[in-house]
Image (cartoon, rainbow, N blue to C red; front, side, top):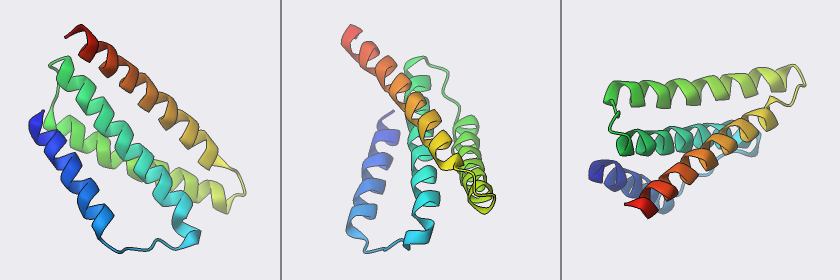
Length: 109
């Protein structure tokens, strides 16, 4: 678990200090990919607390969720369907659910 937290903090610091500007037309895609990544991270932390964490499962879920979410939003934009909001709602709910579980787990510990 310590490696996951260190990696998360290191990634956040690199992202904060790198001067990368995302074009406005890609902002929806990157925001959904970011949420999918956060969803995978919180799901991984939950799996660690349940002692069911698997590296291959985590990495495949991380990239598959992010790529699928970006693909759905891209296709939705091309079809003039706002799948962006569906992805935000789905990932937001999952993140809060996993965060709630982790909060309860930490309080009981």
